[in-house]
Amino acid sequence: MGVVIETVALKKTYGKHEAVRGLNLSVRAGSVCAFLGQNGAGKSSTIKMLLGMIHPTSGTGSIFGHRIDREKESLLIRQKAAFVAEDKRLYDYMSVAQIIRFTKAFFPRWNHDLERRLLEQFELPTERRIGQLSKGMRTKLALLLGFTRGCELLILDEPTEGLDPAAIEDVLQIVVSLAAEGTTVFFSSHQIAEVEQVADHVLMIDRGKLVLDAPMDQVKEQYRHIQAVFPEPVEERDFRVPGIEKVRTEGRTVSLVASHNVDSILEHVRMLRAGSIDVLPVSLKEIFLEKVKSR
Amino acid sequence: MLLYKAWAETRVRFFAGLIAACIVCVYNIHVHAWQVEMWTHDMQNPNGYHFSWMPLGIHNYGWYLWQYLYNNYLQQVWALFALLFAFGGLIRERSSGTVLFSLGLPVSRRRWLFTRLAVAVLESIALSLFAVLVVVIGSAVIHQSYSLTQVLLHTALMVAAGVFIIAFGNFCYTLFPGNYLCLILTLVLLGVPYLLLQTYMQHLRYFGRTTWLRYFDFAHAMAGPWLLNWTTVPWMTLLATWMLTAAFAGIAVAYGDRVDY
Image 1: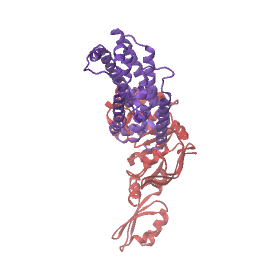
Image 2 (image 1 turned 180 degrees about the vertical axis):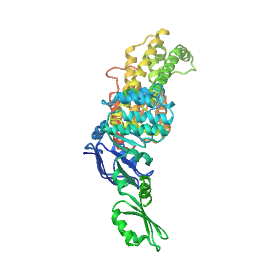
Image 3 (image 1 turned 90 degrees about the horizontal axis):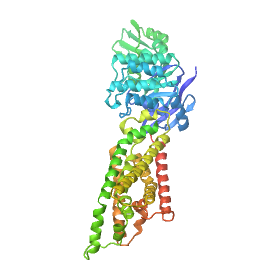
Image 4 (image 1 turned 135 degrees about the vertical axis):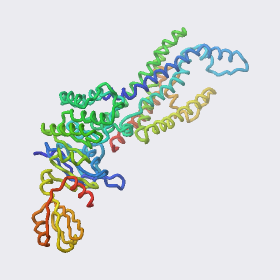
């Protein structure tokens, strides 16, 4: 499968603050790729650079082979990529019907059927002005305007923020169905449960650097939480083995988070004469907290 | 669709401009008879004012229209609304939070800017033509005759020189921070020297004097001489104004291309 999004040593600085520090990432065509990170980790800056809204300080990137730092190519990118921003502000003075008509004019492959279906599903009042819509309604409208563009790539920045649980479920279902039709989805989110539900690839960013880039299945299979009890107290330095991401010792009990190499780690733990060893799966939330807290 | 958006954002200002231009034209046409009476009285009174232009004001309605509308009040109203029509664009959308939606569309930053400027220019032209219509109707009501060609030429000169205001306004709105702060700053930066210089230079001209400040009297450049024809059109002034317009638009484009949203 081809690569849709690619960045090489992408960097963005604001004064002395480095928002994105040499980011190398790639997103495969047809995947649903989650882009995770804390607030201020560099997610939105990366997305904005991908869409030509901010200029990289250094490094390069491309979407569908078009360079992100060239205005003319950026236009081609935005013809093929739909974007829904985190702050889903739309033109308050337009009505729902007017902004749909306005947006539709720029996208020849507009999905009219999906537009009709989503208008009904989201119960959006077409004649009401956007300024009079609730935050949830505005979010739904912004998502409708993104989903229906008929684009090959969907970039969503915190797509479900401000939605109720039923609407979140609807949105995730739409994301999954669009992906099934071949749309590549790249979305940032703080809602780890949602990410686990729909994503097939995870990118994690912390302080502008990529800290995890793996398929979801691999993350679920390879990450393990190992708990061992030893006859004597042990120290953290006893667990310097490749694959161990984090060590926490409490007297004779040791908690390890392993990202790979689990068999060798278990062998090592046994060699240290552990009395009991438990191997448990790790949730994406735990991995996320591990990755962003350990730095 | 971009034109529609720019129009939707400025139509309230446009209609306010029509009302303001209508009020200015109707008022000045309405007080014409009273003004003529006052000047006549002054001319007959040895202690009254005796300016050289007074006979012209008394006997030539065309001059009156030029002096009170195109050299003063209509021009000021037009300039104010031209500045207001230019207010907006991507930088301002950053304050209102809609810029990411706009930039997510397959439209270049330059196209956003030039659409905005085009709508501001079109609205300014429409405003000036509306004023002509009010003058035509108002003058018919008070039974005064004048040269429609002259009125149209003055309208054309006001707009031709006045495009500088739109470009300068857009330039300021691009550079200055804040939403309404930048509007106030622009109005002060352009409005104060424009009005002060206009008043001062008109005062000097009443007494047949002039200074080097005349080169900066933008209001006079927009008004031109009261009898306009091919030879009296201030071509050099227009050329300088257009070059400045192009320079301000060019800087706004260059800055707009570089800015991060």
